[in-house]
Image 1 (cartoon, rainbow, N blue to C red):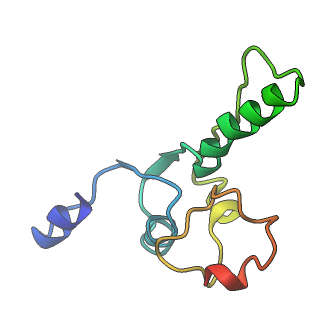
Image 2: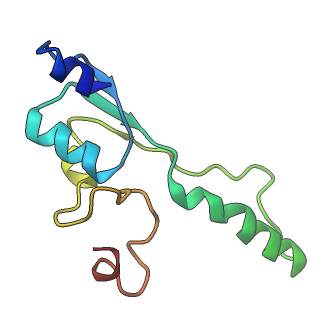
Length: 105
């Protein structure tokens, strides 16, 4: 969407994006007016963890609420990862995995 404004030579509007490295870098470098509500990619594994616990007879929370932070101007630098590729997601949940960040570059 921003590209249409850029191509037309118009002022960039306020925009909502996501925690993808390419968007976060553009936001930072161009001083965009933006925010990024997130749907962290680590959420896919929660049902798998819950299912394994249930199969083992372990208790799981009736309501499992996961954090869904919002990237704002004041937290942007916290979520940007220098040297990561454009399609890297800040909330991938991979930061504690073996080989991070080298295997992601």
